[in-house]
Length: 459
Ligand code: 1HN
Image (cartoon, rainbow, N blue to C red; front, side):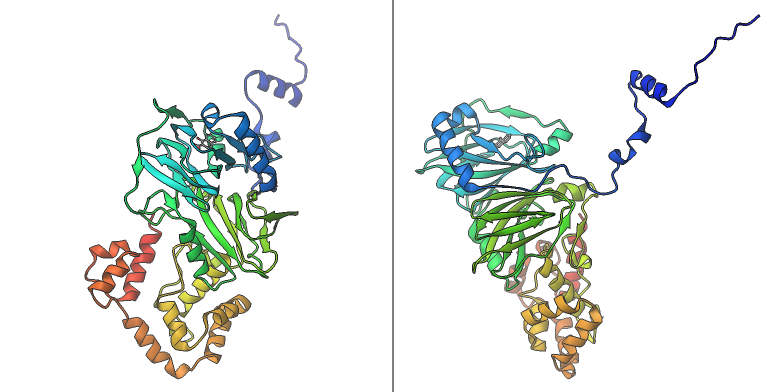
């Protein structure tokens, strides 16, 4: 006769215990945590004050040498996280080197940028190229290139280090290698360095715009692409008495105040800043900058937009979501609106300009500037109308009311037929549209812009 072994009733509790012993876990108890309904950064908004960091660096300067430290850096640690997290994806640190010191050569898979905060005649040598540093410069250390730092001037040399270290916590295959000697052999670059972006150059671009908010992206010298595959950088100018557009993005950012003072509201938190301060904006929190006083504010920032784009995870909530020209081209030159070619394209660019998403585009000099000039419409007045009216039809009606429609056929004809005039003009234009060198047959702007739009977003 078979014996029946009595089985205690099974339960979820027992199941979970046995599942744990088998090195498994039920997904259904933590589904939300695995795939939350919206981006869920752990970092909090935070500001590091220059007048607090500077004395710490001074003390470190007397207590430890750059050689002993390898890198004399105070990490900017997000209060909700631990090192190396300044945001969930970005590292920021303040580094100091003193005259005559050497921070020895090494290389690592992590990418680094430096924003120079104080001092001059310091240098970073990267992959054999010696790059001098002064306030406001951005200097790149691409992945796996040997780099060391030195200082041939007087007084401390201080900079903000921006690295993608947190990414390498999630993908822990970041590795480093020291160089056999303290210095990697280097000599100054001939001409403009591929690794350096002087502040004067960036500031001139920012000041070249009449927009109350303007943003310029740092791009590789050799091609129109972000400075690295993981980290991007840009500079923003916010005019006195105005505020930046309110944004939120899946990218996080570390901001550094280059000039001016003011405040940034990030989610519920208000951060008060002045020159030299650094602050963290976590992913997906709405933020807006407001300068104080009667000076414009200039902010430098780096973010993780390139890697998010590569992962298909970049999203932004913008004032004009249809005009993110970092992500897609504006409407084609030939698109007609209100009886005018190029107007739709110019609206897209004006919207992008208002929210700092012009990417590789610009309003002038060029056909948009000619269109407005020939219509006898001031660019600022047009931009204001775009901001207020938003919709194509309303903007077209405004344009019609502020110009002479009998001139439209002639303006259209001039725009449609305009092109490259001669060899000198072609050479000048080819500095912006490099691919044109291979297409000597092309003259007409509308055709050139169509091709360039396609090439710009082919990557
Ligand atoms: C590093 O190598 C540098 O090369 C700066 O100056 C900051 C932070 C963490 C790990 C490596 C540099 C760093 C770093």
